[in-house]
Image 1: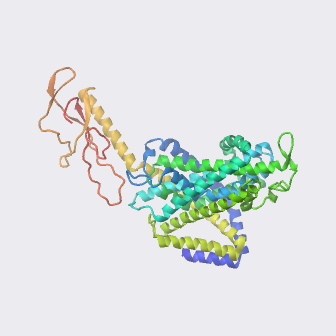
Image 2: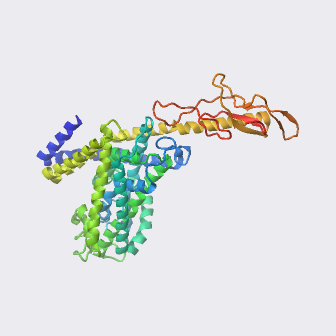
Image 3: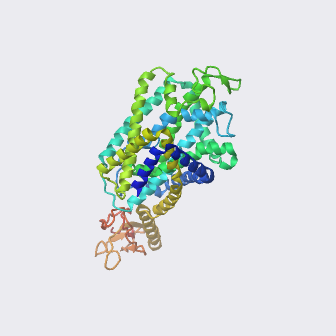
Length: 544
């Protein structure tokens, strides 16, 4: 069924590309205008939910919940993990939209936000770009990733890292190094002082103006509708449409980490990279445009003095070159561009490969009933299939068919928005019943009851011990058949009494494969970390 739909769409795009564009544009416009609030609420709600996880759950006992089996080490190092998050989720966007998007908002800002070409537009434009690519987008990915991990943990997770995953790790590490080198090059060769002064302002503007940017709605007039449909609301829908792929891939590469590491890492690492990258690339593009402009005494743009060096020759967004071109136009103004340009082409190729690989792995997993170690031939098939579809549509249908495909993908995000909300609810419930949380509850309950019983029986002169439980009688077995005698604090001698917690606890679950046995561990005196503790209070000096 799915294959027939894909083939049918390809034929439609090849035979009638204008029809695809017309129908998809009409559908997207209707969704943005009438149901755009769904995506806005989702973008805000997922950030609130993840902040709750980060500030409360991640810093509480829930934060220690492992993503995978108990005691499992992280599959990748922190550096490789960050590099793969960067490469699979946002990498290629920095090249195409890093200079283009902030410059667009500088020339054509969100209605009512600031004056185009003004001093406020410098930080405001980069804050707007950071909003679209920052925490809100990654909150959506993080919720899907955590929910997927919770589902996988319910069954047997016994997969080794595949060769494809190792390949993505190596390519992502290479690309991260190249991206850092590119950012350093632009920062040093470009307007270093300007960028150094702007970066703190962008961070403050991003955090300070986030409520205002998120509160913009379609009800604020036709101009706002146009802006939100083209940018903010469209981005929320676009991230939702990509959430199944990026979320599942994020879950795959995060095995062995804790909820605390996952939530804080996924929210902060990509967002920090975005803020700095868009500030450096976008700030440089804005600086070049201002150098070509006439400025008044307040620093606002009044016209174009040198159109030959301006990225937007007439000072409007309509004269901007296409997004893929503007980055290379920007590089042409700096020395060494002939060396940097081939490196950027290599980066783009690696970004494409890592993104396509991650999507191929996810498609392969989903087509094999969620198999965490998908067949490599099937994974390769999906890689060839996706590349083939893109090539056929682009060559036969042209840009119209490709734009139509993008529009339809965004429209399909609408039903998945409801699924993400359900995932968030299921994730919260699953975390409350996680084996680690249950064991922690058992530990606290056992210790509290034992201490209370010890105080009631022996005052403040007693010790805690762990004893095995007699399976037949359900009571603790004495460590020795002959009770030892001990000297109490008052100096008198008397028989030792064993004070046992009045409630016997059953073994809490451990995170194992489905159907696996849960053997009782060997009791360890002095430790309350065993999964089946039975706390006892002994007078000080007693056996155990």
